[in-house]
Amino acid sequence: IESELGKGTTVSIYLPRTRDNVALEIAARHDGPGGGRARILLVDDDDEVRAVTCDMIGELGYRIESVGTGEEALARIRVERFDLLITDVLMPGMNGVELARRVRTLDANLPILFSSGYADVQMFGEELSDETVLKKPFRIAEAARRIKAALEADVQSEAVVT
Image (cartoon, rainbow, N blue to C red; front, side, top):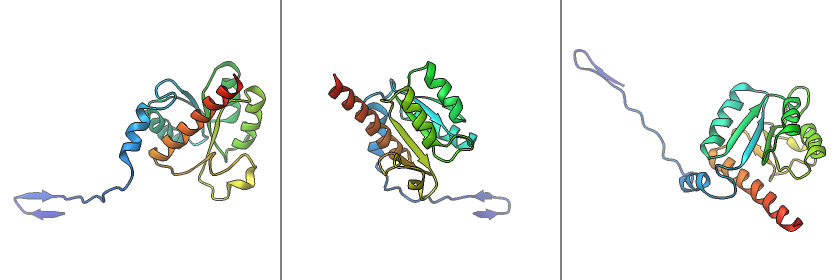
């Protein structure tokens, strides 16, 4: 900050360059299964995290809807069709792993991704692996890659069944 009496103030901000692959983020918005067609249900008990995550996934071109509890998610899944479920692991009441187990009884083929800021998520169940957990905070490129992989895996499993 430079300030001179009678002349004003100049504020300079220097930001570091990113090494993130911007091309991946742009491509994720426009290719792969879904893009604007895939419908995703996000479950997170933290209102602010849920809002930011919804904005991020929406930026990728997916149709995103969200709820704050596992019970709300189950109610929606009973009457609506989603292409992917993304759920927080640690939530009061029903945690994300229990939600996933209950969802499997309603729709065994619905792909599920877990999100967690907790370091040792494996203690919550064998469902949690490096491929199924988005570690918070995650970048948009990582979310794009995981969502695309989950949707493609679902498409491939449907192709094998038919």
